[in-house]
Structures are given as structure tokens and as C-alpha cells.
Image (cartoon, rainbow, N blue to C red; front, top):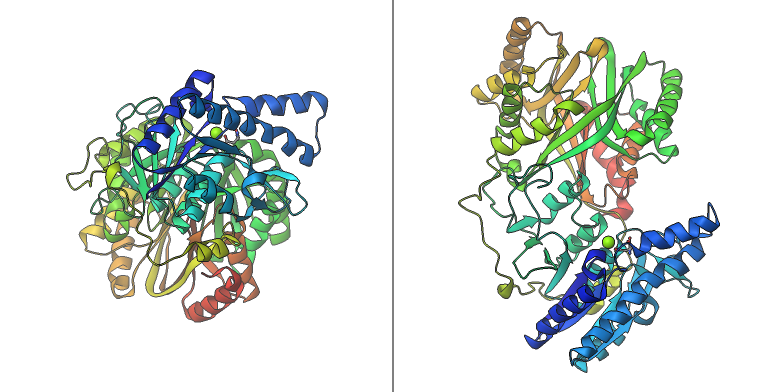
Length: 593
Ligand code: ASP
Ligand code: MG
């Protein structure tokens, strides 16, 4: 028999009428012959109200008591949901996290799941009942109630789907699926039939808040198909699974993060350990760092640029000031009115010219690029806040995201069937112990590339577009691209190409620099590129920092950096590739799958 997990978010259970409507969906799935587990969130904004109540009493209420309080929200909607199903003539039982046996660690208000017992749920399901599980909660060793962090019901739903081997996890929400970009910003955004886990992870971390990120990580790790759909209609939503919608298409979606702040550390001595020194200072303040870009400059000094949330800017600048002093860097600059525009797609890893197309379109629209960072499946650029919307629309059009690709594979929910082969529940449960840990899939070394850098790029639109037009016309494949702001607002642009094209690329860039009034050019005929890829890089923000730390300890100089949700890429001294690989493998040994 098929097993379906259905999760209803706060807006889907906001009042008793909506609870009844949700109950009807569960009953219908049961009548279609499925076993059904329903995971509920607290009604409407109940969690927010409970938090307000707590803060009327104390500025910092004890975290344990916060969890006692917040977990009641889901208990209320669970009991009401069970009553609603009874009133429709079906059997249901509501269970709290403790009653199910969802064990977590003791980190109150952001606990991590350690194990889940399936016995009680299985028994109820086998008796023909619909099981209602309270989302967002568990218990620790001492039977203290814990919660999983805001939005944690998604995590509960996907975790239950994983341990029960559900055929699908349906996420009912107030939107009818995933769009190519936020339709509130661009009305021409298109509803997608499918999206891959990796694309969703990148987009979610770039501001497309469809689901809690950790829950997508889970789903990927345990291959749980997710169907995001509307609780207010019966239309088919979007399937999040391994395969993208149109494998031959370079870009699946675009995203905008409106209010970021950029910080640049100028003239950092180009020697091992400097990135680590900067970022460990910021990390010590618990400030999440977003886009990180570094490249080597002329005169043996590097510039390191990164973005943080605007709200964290003051604290960040204080930490940076300290680092600048300690390192003997030249200084730092910042801009608190910047936005990040990104395109994401699994298909771009296999195609050339994607970055060029994006830069060309932005240049034609007159948009200036302050920072650039590319990874295998994502390209991000930093633009001024005023140009953010234009930039997003421009890239959305450039990749024709408003039209469904001809090769798009439709999604038929009736054909969903779990394809996990040969993995029994016991194996999943034992893997659950480390379910929320960081998993490193792969650490790769690529020794085939060379680096080219052009310094002193004037602060106006079109330079990146011109560079990559010419490079691509020459038939040279570009891999990693980074650009950061340098002195006097001039940017430094670095990229890697195959070693076999080094001389040709260098000549081309020299000519171009003269024509465009930039320079000097610097280069390395051989650079070693290391990629650490996996799951949970963002929720375990320390991955980038641990990478820098480990390379610093090995005395290996970092020439280029870019980071994304599923990958950290660094370019290091070409002679030190195997050393760097060995030390990274040691540093992440515990986290390797
Ligand atoms: N009720 C919790 C919250 O608002 C959990 C959830 O809705 O996912 O964060
Ligand atoms: Mg919610």
C-alpha cells in the first residue's frame, strides 16, 4: 500500500473551517487507498503570539520553558485535526512528538532530531487510522520537550516520510508550487512542474522561501519526493526530486536577495592564512556570511569581498577593522545598499556560455556588476539596490524562464512511487542518528586549470560581458569566475580556463585590457581547484571557514574562493594541489559519506 505524508502549514490550519478542508484532503487520500500521516503546524500566527506572550513576561525567557510553550501550538491543531477527521466518519489519532518517539538533542528552540520510532505510527496505520503528528517538536533524553527551530514542521514531515519510507511527502501551503522566481516581484514568473533538490536548495538559500532549507536537505539525503501544492485548491503543484524539470536547460530559476551589505578588505597580504584570519573573526561574532569572493591582485596583495545581512553590518565592520590591523591590510570599504541576483540550474554544469549570456544581458540593460561568483550550478552577481528589480527581470528574460522548456517533463502525482531500492527501515533509522549532520559527498581536486586575472576594471557596465564574449568566441571554456571590488571602486576579475588555452587566453586578455583601459593582468599557468561538496554547507556555515583554516595550517595560499549552498570552491597554488586535497580529506574525514 502506498503511504503519503501530508503537511499542513500555519495558513492551511488557520481556523476551524480550514482545518476541516485539510481533513477532507487527508480523508480523500485515505479513501484512494493510501495510508496517511498528517503533520500539522500551529494555527495561523499562533507561534508568533506565544512568543509575544513570553516576551511580555521576560526579555530572555528560559529556553526550556519556551519549548514547553511553543509546542502547545501544534498540539492544538493536531487534536482539532483528529476531531475533524472523526466528524467526517474516519478514524484518526493525534500524537505529540513525545508520543511518536521523536528523540532530539537538548538544544532548546533549535533541537536536532536524533531518532524516530515508527512502531506506534505503524500500529495505528495498520489499524486503518489516519495518524496526525504534531510538527516542530520532540523530546530529549530526559523527556524535556524540545522544538526544531522556526518552520520546523517541514522538517518533521520530511523526517517522518523518510523513516516510514513514504511514497511522497506533500507540503500544503498558500502557494501552488515553486516558481521560476518570486511572482510577487515578477508577475511573469512561471509555475514549474518539477525542480531538483540541488536547485531548490540553492534557490531557497537565495531568498525563495518555499520550504525550510533543512527539510530539503533531508529529502535529498533520503530521496523523499516532495510535492509542494496549494491547500486551497486541487491543482497539481511542483515535484521536488532528484531530476530537474528540463535536463537540457541551463537555468531553472532566478532569485533576488534585496538588502545585503557588501564589505571588502583591501590589500590583504597574499599569503596563507589571511582568509581564515578575516572570516574566523566574523564567525566568532556568530554573523552568517553570505557571498564570499577572493582573488589575487597585482602587487602580491589580495582583495576579499563578502556580503552579510544589513542588520549585521555594524558588528561585521568592527570585526573587520580588527582583522585589517592584525594582517596589515590596507583598509576596508563597504556598501550597504546592494542586492544579489542569481540564476540556478543543474544544466549549466554541462553547458558553456551561460555566464556570458547573463553578463551580456545585464550589460545591455546598463546594469553594473560589483561582485561575481559562480559555482557549478549557480551564478550570482551583486548589483546596486536601485537596479535589483531590473537585473532580475533582465536575467529572467535572457533565459526565457517565462516559457516552459520544450523538453520539460510533466509531473503526474498519480504516478509517484518510491524508487528506493533495497534499503530497509532499519538502515534508514540507523542513518537517522546522523541525519542532521553535515555530509560531505565529495572533495575533488582539479589540476587542469590556469588562472587569468584582470585588475583595475572600471566601475561601469559591460566589461565582464566583453571579456567573456571574446573568451567564448575563441572557444575557451571558462570554469570558475570571481570578481570583487578593489581600490578606488575598480574591480578585479579572475577566472579559470584549461591550461591548454593559457597562452591564447592571456594574449586575448592583454589586448582587451589595453582597449578597455584596465589592467594590469596577472595569471598562473597552473592553479589547483578544490571543491568540497555536500549537504548542509549553509546550516553548517563553518565549512568554508574550516576549509580556510585547514589550508592555512598546511601553509597553502588561497588565490580564489567562491561558495554556494552545496559547494565551497577554492583555487590554490598549482604545486600544492595534492597536499591541499590530503589535508581537506583529513579535516572532513568524519563528515564523509
Ligand atoms: N509553528 C512553528 C513556526 O511557526 C513551526 C512551523 O510552522 O513549521 O515556526
Ligand atoms: Mg510554518
